[in-house]
Length: 491
Figure 1 (tube, helix red, strand yellow):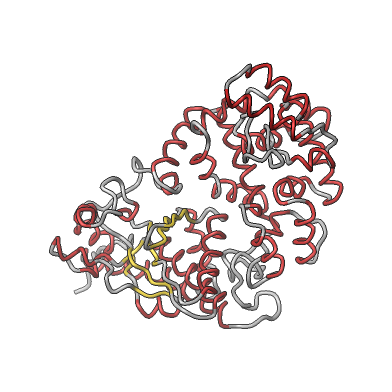
Figure 2: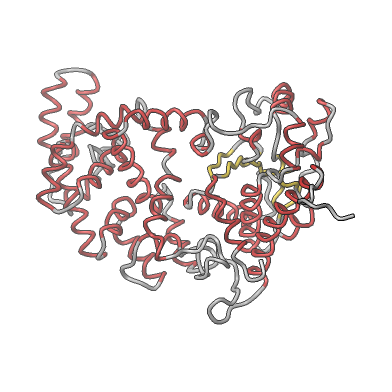
């Protein structure tokens, strides 16, 4: 006899359907990556080789591809992704650095009005270069960068028309360090070495940007060149095949697989030169919050300082669901909120499940297999990370050593493992995984580093280098990797 009302499925059947749905979405990501890895180029919409962050114009084929329509979003994400260092290394903390920097806003506004450069940009450079300290010195050699905007002696003298007497400046600096007649010596030093004069340093920085824009044709390129130099940036643009394009295009559309010569030039500069523009934008964001929402800035600063990366900004402890015990993980699996790892899927994406993953489970009388899973977005990110590394390096696998945990597991782990935290662990949320720092070749290590940096720039992850592993926390923005898979033909 047929029921007269809706069919009621058993709870176990509902859980199976949810789990299968989650698996299907992640499988879509796997199919996406395998397709673009294995097929060659053709007309529009035809799968082409996977080039992380570049090379495939159809976003349904390359979820990390540069898209000219998304330049503002790319810039915003890169600024956020590379902001942690500003919080971690600001002398006295980011709020104190913002307060020092804000003192020079009247000078900055005056220079901005006379030169046409954005006051926010100039202020961001001041924050980034000196944290608002006009006497900042990069090294004991005053030929190197000094002052509010960290100008080199040679650049100041020969390009920017500043009066710089390094020998006199060094003599005065030694006296200042000894504490003798400090105010008088500082005043004299500002005259003999104008890099120490805040007003003249800011004006000189604006002159440099104007000079650079004349050579490069764009504001963003001029700002990027402040750290790497006009010549280096011109070489990177030449290798890319253009003379004046948005810096976001040069950065995000260059990779080891697409425009590799341009990518190698940017990567060879070191000292974070290639990310300088993003860090200036991050400094602008900090100064904006300092003025408009100091409470939010203080909250973000605390989250940034809680860990060695910005992972708690991505998932604050106060608002993020954690798994308290094995039963919570089991329920999340049944509901499709956690997806178990698949060895075959991993193998096809250049990944391997470490044999010891979840071994601590035995201490709490659970199966290690329970602790081999991730949230769908985190798993999609891990698969993309592995596939990109494999596509670049051509060989080798990455060893995934840890994924989800519950708080009971974490407590047992922290008892034996000094690296495990007794506090809030991102592993207990399902948003984090660890990859062993053991590589099959230098090429694999380089490829993995590229993927980490590129996914950080896209706001998808925050990561930190631990003694034995790279710890990666995944942003909820990674959900776009899932929606990308859903748009595949037949998906």
